[in-house]
Image 1 (tube, rainbow, N blue to C red):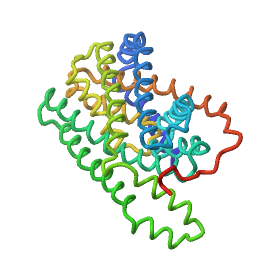
Image 2: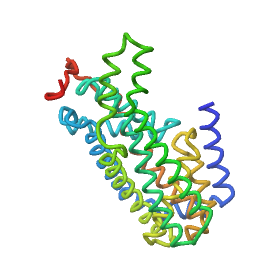
Image 3: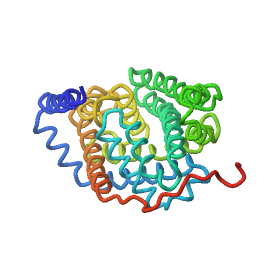
Length: 316
């Protein structure tokens, strides 16, 4: 199924190019390529904010992981995010496995679940900001209503996931059915219950990271000749967020995002070819960093002697 969906995404990209014309797409890409390094730099800015978000999700244990390793782990997670179906879940699982030697497996898993919930909350908040941008550019358009639905869905998922993980009954149910894993599950429960119900700290830094993507959209809009306003940039980011929600199983939303941008061209105040080009060049910047992330994963060396995950001082 994953292969079929991936091929479907590639076919959709080919259809967009054919529909809008190779010459029109090629001309727009040629105009945008000079800003590709800046687009990549903004993507790195997003990774830095996500690294800080990961560190806050680990609480006091976050200081045990060298910041350089944490960033490299985030770089690998970014590669998974932009290539694997269900990218965020794959990214958080991969990152948890990489940092587990410093913080313990249960604690890394707890932080990963917090990051998943924080992602729901952060993307929900950014969707609200993007809805305002969509309203400013085109009023109560289809994109505006889709973004409001995204806000409601993602905030419900994020808060619901946090409430479930903080419930003594939920983890207690697992402990009763897996008694041989009770110590691991108790550590996981303690790590997952840390912080407030909204996982506000990591969600805030994830929100700032998506702000880098909004700036990226503005840069790309100016490069391809579209209307380069902040409201338009938020609207373009809104198209990206809605596509990410609707096309979870398309690897990296390849093809789906380009099609969504082309369909939303009128809302974005540009032509379908230029709108699709914005998505194509954004994908190029992400895939370039993803390739570096996979090289980093191949070169990764585990910590020689992972410490036992002892409880933090003062927690017994």
